[in-house]
Length: 369
Image (cartoon, rainbow, N blue to C red; front, side):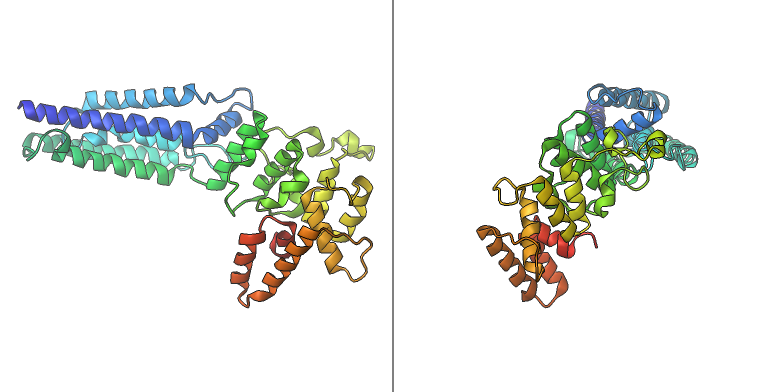
């Protein structure tokens, strides 16, 4: 009897440790920014999500809920893990944040899913209560008992379901992470979010462009990132290009009715104007404009502007300006050779991306298509 109680107690402790650890880590490190935008939207921007206290409080409340469920059901052996189901269910519900929460925010299907799941769970708990008195004793005790592994399996299944059902859109998570860091004015750190990924969207493109403008690196790092949307992705339109938590500066917002009436508009930073032309692949207009704002022979010319000028020089039979840079000319020749080396289009694009994916040349040929 003593060994049986010890085995049961150790199993319950293990389940509690797993639940508390998973819930806190899940809230504090994976869903923190998504919960932050949810609170921002629900409060109309009046309150801020506490990245320190909120995960602790939510974890505590959900664990206390399990304690209450256990006190009522007294399921303590083979199916003890099921006493955590209501806590996991609520955890899933509060972290199932839609990517368009700024436009539509409601419980959605959870009005039906929540009661149905609880009814089904209640039936399983009733069955478990009927089976406990007739359960056979486990062949082993302690940390390696059958009770232990059966309950750990239940916990694992519920953890996997939480991750599968709740908000798991990678681009949405990256956007919210960037917006949080941008609110804190940590622009360089924000630029590191998803920098190795090849996937992006218009809103993520806009956020990265805004960060690069703040760090003064728009002309030297823009095309090191995957970009979509062309110049239209440089400004929020509140539909396909938007920020939910970060407030864009006035010059990035739509002109007021008074400004429109008087034919006024915000003046954009020079690099925004030049990069807009590059994003739309308007080389001739770019060459005309860049000479108004930069001394093109200067060594301080941003690298992407140099790349665009080299491309223009090689692509125009009668260029208005001839630009040469020994290192860049050599790289461009290599780029062209690689471009003609592969017969298979996919193989060629992959090879060029691996070597020159951080250049304007690659974007000009393959980007934004």
